[in-house]
Length: 100
Image 1 (cartoon, rainbow, N blue to C red):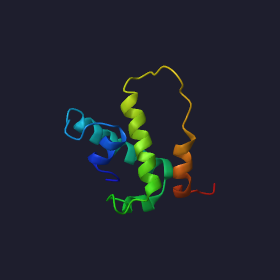
Image 2: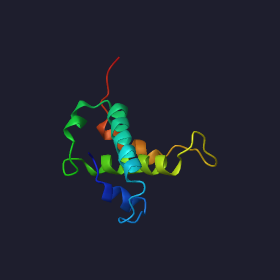
Image 3: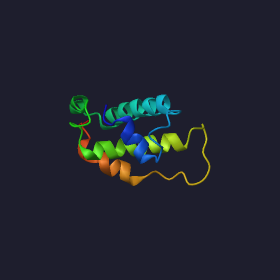
Image 4: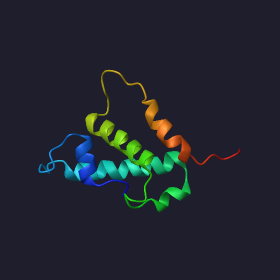
């Protein structure tokens, strides 16, 4: 895993002693890691299985995804739906580009 549950709770300002959403947060972490690996199409990311080995930009991108999924739990959302350019900026150096 890129991150620990404690890191996620800190980012979301959730009390470490409250465990009501722990299973959900772990599911969001797994989803964010799978998405980042698919998005970058970089086989080297399989090596980042521990928090210590994972570059900080990948952790930051995972936290952005997790926060977005945690905040927007419904199928549709209201308000500003613009993409966050920070996410792509963080992941761009890890993209595996292929020539067609």
